[in-house]
Length: 410
Image 1 (spheres, helix red, strand yellow):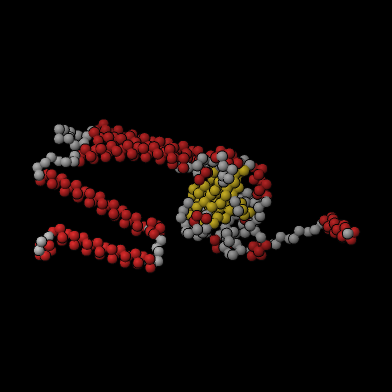
Image 2 (tube, rainbow, N blue to C red; image 1 turned 90 degrees about the vertical axis):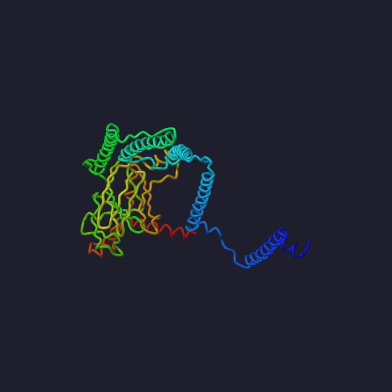
């Protein structure tokens, strides 16, 4: 074989190309390995925490689907150009997908109810909470039935009545009976639900006060990022406050010209007597917060410059809920349900529901908000120091004498 023929031979040319590619690839791999060894290691774990990463993954999936679709389209056009029958019956494929999605979707509904259903709301521990749960459950049952029936009809009709060249669609533009049914029935159902909601709302916010069982007033003030709880004193009335009176010593802006304010008490937790109505007075010092007590079905915004009121009656003590939940560490909580800033997650307080006797013992131990500094600020008489009685002095002197005698005997 001559040198000219050897050079122009296809096999020889192909081998030369392969050798060149292999050599270049080897050199590139060596350079890359050397660069990787010299460069600092990058923590690729952080990549998965980036939004851009998931956007790129989504775009890559979309591109892959588009490529597959174009390939199938080319396949269909090539068969059509060759005069061959259609290779893929897309009407049947779409109908089967509808049936598949119906089965998967109904199973998803069942899975959500069985797995996440118990996570919706905890057991109600207030009188009005039971009414709210009844209304919520009725609404959920009705909407679930409507959801399941309509989707079975929607996806079922799409599967059963898929396109067929042997069948022609029937033109059916209007039916008065069907129009009346799907207009009147939903209207009646919604009317019942709205009336239930209205009556439940009135029973919560428009209560007739029982003079023999007046509600316990508790004021809760929100600020970033904490709650302040104020109880009334012996008079049973929480006194007035004014934001203009807020100072370093009077952080809540309590108006001590109102006599009802002078015996009010502060607390680090909320303690409630079981079975007694509680009247919450909610205010805010800075931004809008959302006072939320999930077990008592209480949620109301606290708005600067406004007082919002909510009254409820707890029905289960903390000890009873610990037994029901089989959790000795169970605690009622109230927290902020509105994203009010970086420390939002810290805005929570413990709520203890106890017997009437336990509540009276606890409230007697709380300290009043009004102290000597505030008395001086508002020109109120400072509480006199406790006077030692003669009997106490004599007892202390005799005790001192006995102690000295024992020391001398030693």
